[in-house]
Length: 449
Image (cartoon, rainbow, N blue to C red; front, side, top):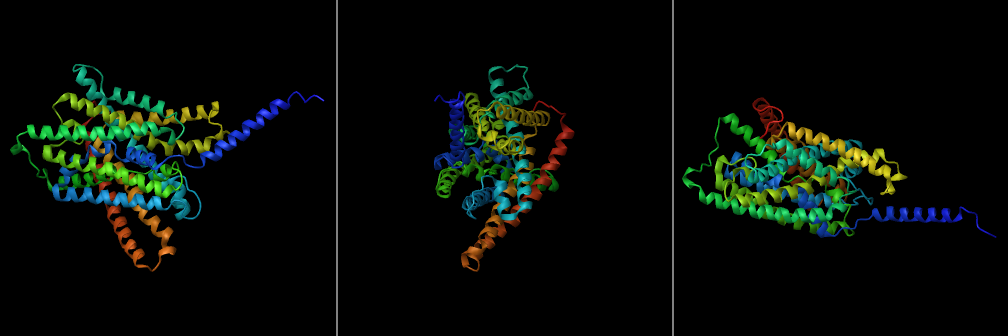
């Protein structure tokens, strides 16, 4: 007997379905190592747009308060990141996003509050770093074409087009080689900028440098509020559960190692740049440290190129929650496993195009880099990176450690973090809003900064 004509086609279709199911099952398990976790975390946190404003933040606070705030924020955010990593499968289930983790601990309000703060953080962060990338691209352009007609808005648009291209990559793990390059660029940016800052500092007459806090009492207070928001922004890492989902088992151990390696890079870059930048230029340091540098120009160009490369990867990490939110609702479960399907590609292209258009438009219209850094840090990153981890750990682990000395110590420490950084969020938001209002009055929309 001969087989029906369609039997071969049916067997082929069944084989493809099996392969798709196997691929979907494989995607449920992370593939990355602790090194991948380290580069993802370092790319997320240690962007030039995050630590380039730190000298200005120290100048707004002065040496004692500035140094203590920076060191305290470093230790607190490292501790908070370890807390979030420790909650991996805390209830026996895998929570692949920050929103899902919050829902498993706090229920409905936890999911939607984290969704809100995560969107504020990711959108605000990407507006700020797109302004920074545009500024760096413009600086490189002006080095070669001093009388060129292109404005900051042109370079913000060019960077947006490039990010739209990168946005077509399917997930965070597919960005691992991009982020590895970005991590090396972070080190290159930090080393170059620190060296050039020291060189410029030695060229300046040190007697002309002042470290006093200028302005009226109210101005000093609002600048201090703004600085606290900028420091909170510089440690922004609202994506750790999403990153942990890409790491192979044992995921906790691998992420602990990755965090430690990433924070080693962060300490070496953040602290040195913040201290040398404030030392070199004093209270006259600019919100974006590269704007304060003058010689040698070729090294400044190199630092700007490193900045653009690193920012391109950081941008991608932070836009992923927004992409995932819309794709989860626009893709059916049947087509979600067919990565090569035309429908999936079209949905991604539409979602990413709308997102990039919004971010690029806002960044070009209101290029007030320092203000966006502060308000994003205050409203978005402070709740996600300091307040929620402390509260979530206490609630998730209270039954296991209740009435022990260690639990009581953690209780006091976590409540102190929640209280202090809640205050930072409120004060930073007040300072940032005040300066945004002032800048809108001073500059026109689409001003070429």
